[in-house]
Image (cartoon, helix red, strand yellow):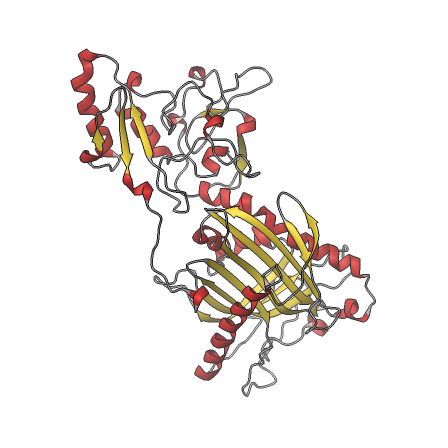
Length: 468
C-alpha cells in the first residue's frame, strides 16, 4: 500500500461533522493538494497495479496463482485460490464470463467521472454501495484516451446479515486503461492521512484491497471478450479475529462475483439507450401483423402483440423484454434483436418505408439473406451462445466487433410499367441514407446493395497498453 506523505495538521483530515447515516456531506473529507512528486508516484503505482492485476487474472497454469474451479454455469465460472504471499484470511475469488461486445462498450459501463455515470455504475455493479467520494483525480479522460482515468476514492459498502455486521469502508487507488486487446480497472488500497480509519466516528470497519478489479481481453471466439472480476481483500474486523463465521462473508463475496454475469443485460441496456425511442406514429400497425416479426409465431389469445420502441415492429412477449434505459423514467419494451444491436437504427427502417411505395418494400426489410419464407429466428448463426436471442442480423456497421459481413438491402420491382420510376426512387432512397450511387448495381431479380465497409474491422490506432 502507498502511504501519502506530507505535513497535514491534525485538524485537517475530517470536518467536525460526524453523521450517523450515509451519504456523507460533500465537504466531509478535506484533502490537501498533492505535490508533483506525490502525484507522479501515484500514477506510477497505478500503472504497476494494472499490470499486476492482469497477470493475476490468468486462470491457467501460466499465471502466478493456482485457481480452483468452485462452480460453473452457462453465465459465469467462479474460481478460488490461496495466495501464498498474503495472510491466510485474505479472501481470493474470481469470476469469469464471456460477452459479445467491443472493448469500448464494456469500458463505458464502468465510467464514473460524472454524477450520472456514477449512479449508473452503482445501479449496475454496486447495489450495496452506501456512499462514495472521489478524493483525488490524478488523470482525467481525454479525447485521445477517453477511457483512461486515475483516481483515489473512498467508498462504504453494506455488509450482509441485516445489520449484524459492521459495514466496510475502503480507501483505494483506482486505475482505468484500455488498449488494443482489452481494458482493465485495477483497485488497490492506499493510505491517506485525510481519510483515516472511521470506525470510531462512523462505525465502519476499514477493509483492504490487495488486488481487485476487472480485466477484459479478447477471447478466442471472434467478437467476444473474456471478462474476469478478481476480488482479493481482507475484510478485517471480527472476520480476521475469527468472531464472524467465514461462510457469512464468503456468501456476500460470491454474490458480488456473480453480479458480473449481469453485464449481458447492462450491455443490451446501453445499446438500446443509443439514439432516441420512436414515437407511436412510427409504430407498425398491429392489424397488419398476424405473426411475430422475429419468430413468425402466429398471434392469438395466448400470444399477445407488443411494439418494440426502438424499431417499431410488432413482436410477441417472448421475443421482447422491458429494459431500464437512460432516456426513460419507466421500463421500455424492446425486441431481442434491437437489444443485441442486430438491426439497423429505426430511422433507417422507417425512412425507407416512408420514402418508397408500400408494394416496393418487402415485409422483412432488414433481413440480410433476402428470403421471405423463413422465420427470422432461422437466420442467426452461432446457436451455441446462450445470450444470443434469435433475431435478425445487422444491416449497419456498428458496433465494430462484428465479423466481416456483406450488408444487403433488397428492393423488389412491382411491374415493368413502373420500372423506370422505381429505379429513380431507389436511387434517391439509397442516397438519402448515405450510400453512394455507384454502390448500386443491377441483378436479375431484386436490386441488391453491397456495402464494402463490412469487409473491414476497426483497427483504430491506440497506445498498446497490453504490450508495453
